[in-house]
Image (cartoon, rainbow, N blue to C red; front, side, top):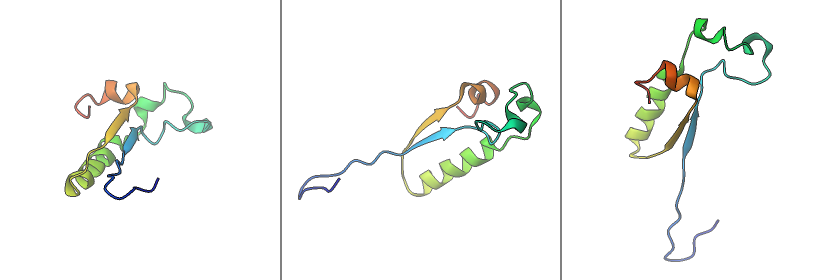
Length: 76
């Protein structure tokens, strides 16, 4: 979309917060019973995203998997 003179564009930024093993159709990680035994990077990567947003004074919407919210409530 191109803004007309005097018109302000609105930009939206969103993130889907999942861990690396929540990939679809990857045989090695398809069993959710194995997920708790796998190393998680979700907190570190989300902290990085938040730091970048803070640095640029930018807001975003975060969609967090229920599985992540259950295991990392402080992240939410």
